[in-house]
Image 1 (spheres, rainbow, N blue to C red):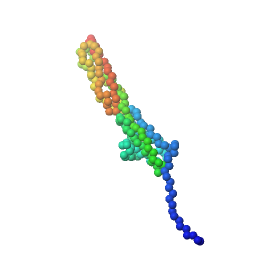
Image 2 (cartoon, one colour):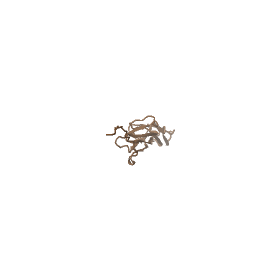
Image 3 (tube, one colour):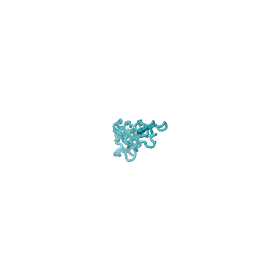
Image 4 (spheres, helix red, strand yellow):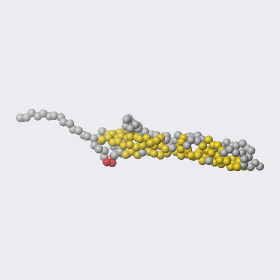
Length: 178
């Protein structure tokens, strides 16, 4: 014919879309007392085909696919969460992991002796620790050897690792000899 036809390739671009309304990411923080288990933030809405979830605990300077898990008592730690997918715009959110001390009570075990006898070993009952965990404390009693009732005191640091310790006094009774 009368024409010479030249074909030129074009470009067809598919841009990333916004995430669907029902697939927006949501991060649930964790904040409870120590229970000896590992805990982290929970992410929802990151289940589209091709989603890649990453976490950062340094303000976004570095990212990892390994979700941070914490076991021991700590101040609130901010966890940034980023979900990327080649078909959707990246989405970011953040939450916190905070593990507070578990309450523990150390109660001086009330005891006594007969006038003139040696004091028995002073003991306390510990309630609230988990597993083989221990807290440090001492048990002493008010000075005196006459027939009477004396105060026993369990004492130690209030903050001990994963525990917040409360101390409860007991009584030491010296009774009359026969």
